[in-house]
Every structure is written in structure tokens, then in C-alpha cells.
Amino acid sequence: MEILLLVVHVLTAVAIIGLVLLQHGKGADVGAAFGSGASGSVFGSTGSANFLSRATAILAVVFFVTSLGLTIFSARKSDEKAVITTQPAPKTSAPGDVPVPGVPAGKPAAADGSKAGDVPK
Image 1: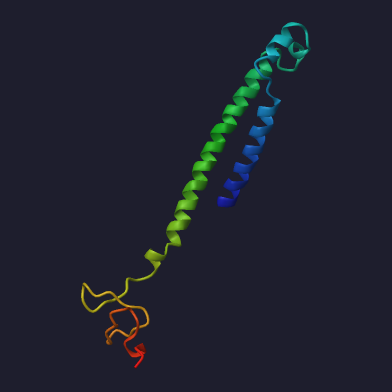
Image 2: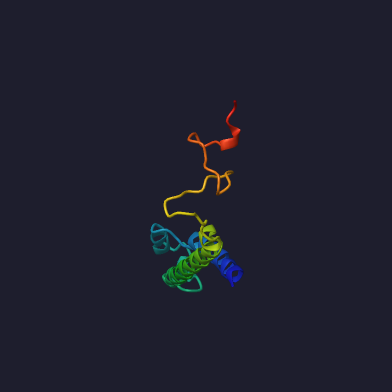
């Protein structure tokens, strides 16, 4: 499902880019008034602008929906792989004791953080 959503997302983005490049700027309407040939198009003088604008708006909505869907998939995937939820909490002997790495639970650690047996003599 995620791959299908990603494919739709990419195709929608490419289609939006194409539609935006096909649209005329605001200055193109002035050229149509002097007979530049835009009025003889398939959609008429303003029909193509309306069609392209509506198609771009629809594709923009599809793009935002797929973006939201991909975000939801990503959030669920990161929750499943979280280390905190998959590993149990370390067991300590007392509520205030913090385990020191490399020191067995029964032996006390030295004040500087090294092992008790590693003190040079």
C-alpha cells in the first residue's frame, strides 16, 4: 500500500509540474486579444485556462492527500521500530541504583567510574 501511495505521489508531482508549465501567464491574455491564435484553441479563449487551473487544483489536492498518507505510514513505521518499546527496562536492585556498564551487579564501582579491579597498585 505504501509503495502504491508513493507511486501516485510521484506521478502527481510530475503531472503538476507539467500542468503548471502548460499554463499561460497573466500577460498571455493580452496577446489573445490581438489574434495570436489562443482564441482558436480546443477549449476556447478562456476554456483552456479554466481546465488547466481546475486540473492543477485537483492534482494539488491529490498531492497533499498522498503527502499526508505517506506521513502517516512513516510515523507508524517509526513507532514499530522504536528501541524504547521493544527492549525491556533494565532491572536494578534498588529504585535509586543505576547500573554501571562493565561492572557486575554484585560488585561496587570505583568513584571515578572504573572497575574496582582495574586500580593500579
